Length: 264
Image (cartoon, rainbow, N blue to C red):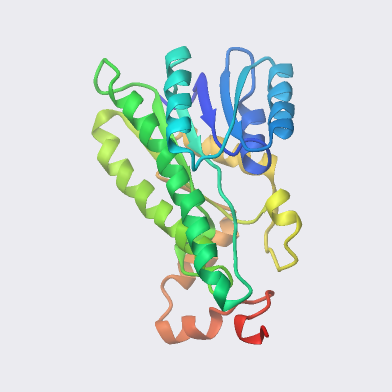
């Protein structure tokens, strides 16, 4: 049912995994609706998609614009009923001083969590009204992270926002299963992208965005509940989340980043 989506909407598609996913799906007979904040980069991705034979339409905007995003999603669905919506847009924000913790957390949740709400809720609204019932060929994907498996000392705001998405996506999957709408949560490890290019910390098992897109697309076609990769990170996270608290206290440190206690 989910193996051949024809109408696909992707947020955060101007770079990284979002752009790689758009290019992965781009083919004759495919309609792509992509959005991002950088007009030039987004249009470049759109041109690459049309060169591959797909139809591509852009909306330059921010996922925190709830009303604007909702109107665009409704308009996209009216033009070509959406089969797959990937809520990918997100940021990795941190704080190097204690006074920066609050703003980093607020901004992270506004974009990573509320931005996903602003995307998937309108998508689920239009999908759930279709007939026949249960709905056929309708799916939503939420981009979490491997860091969403545990609260990570090096990135409290980011890891916590991604944890919220992981749990929310799992809950939505159960809520909409009987309606025929698939919901999957994507938990990638470190991906080579603009987000990680300026990061000087250790990033084990780093993989390319095109490879990540291929893994994600394969998992979505199978309607997997959770798409976590690479396999090495799956093993590590399963071990970590089952460790006793006193062991976690010893290893959960802001490694490879400047510690808050070392700041002036």
